[in-house]
Length: 390
Ligand SMILES: *Cc1c(COP(=O)(O)O)cnc(C)c1O
Image (cartoon, rainbow, N blue to C red; front, side, top):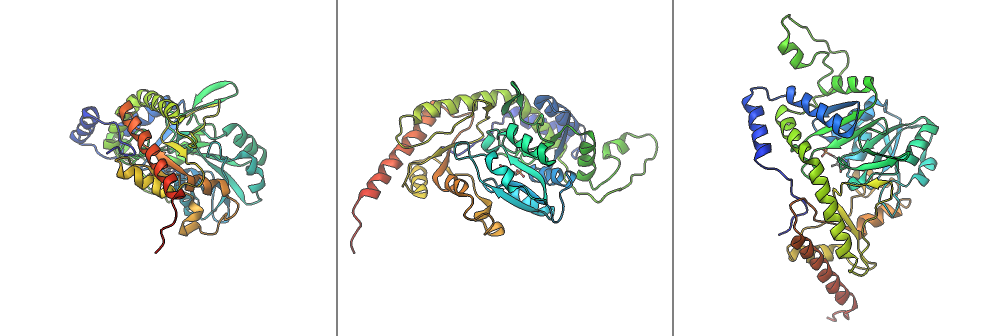
């Protein structure tokens, strides 16, 4: 069985976790601080703040950007549902913009038309790790005075070229970028998230809000020789990462360059193999973007049944997932954007994600491509077969 993904973990992560446990300090402490510093350095961000997952990171980002009841946040429906949910959590309304059918990322052409007097921020997504068109998004946001929050849940290790130079996603280019360390992403801490920002005051607020609005971190009180009384100037949340997770994250971060190199090589190999499968459209990467290939998304030929293809591949021992979901097709956002998001709906219904993880061999990849080829042959046969008569 070839799974859709498999985290790359070994004795090194296990030992890091064990050491954190045996140190006697399990909650947010020295390991979290070290992970934040190393992460900031990796993505060349002035500030990095660790939290419990990317959903809580996005929630804090929107709150600190000033998003509240009555506001609108422009984003895509074509994303994991957390992207839309966090807007609602702030009491605001997500306004869905369609994607570019070539990149599956927010189409900047459609952005200006979605801006209203209630718009507060743009929440753009680097979907499946492919950077979205930040150059054009930032220019439109700047002209309208909107904050830009990057949903970089999938995009650790991806790069973008802006003004002629390559920079890591997360530098950040908008006001803040939010990352996920869920096992479905490129590096993992089980659950975990990170916010990177250029604004010192935003970083201070993230730190305050992630631990109940408490003015003094636990570590500071623990190490103080004088009695310290804390204050609670704002009402906050418990969005902390633990030191056990951060210890694992530090090992994962060391592996990141190798993981991304390997994923890029695997994606290039898929490109070559799939060039020989008629009708299948391979993913495209603009010249100014270098993705981390968190997922490898192919569009199926016209007229084939997505579910039957996926079932046939599963029967052949290959797991796949359907194209990225659309929030407006789920109950909480039903009716929002219907009719105006054709490319989002098409990508969801016509694409499938193929297995991709660093431990994959070329043999595994051939197996995946053969399973797809076989499924397509069966599908063509099913489509052309005369209907059974009762
Ligand atoms: C995974 C994902 C999230 C949520 O991340 P968690 O860490 O699971 O909260 C948000 N946005 C996108 C685009 C994602 O892929």
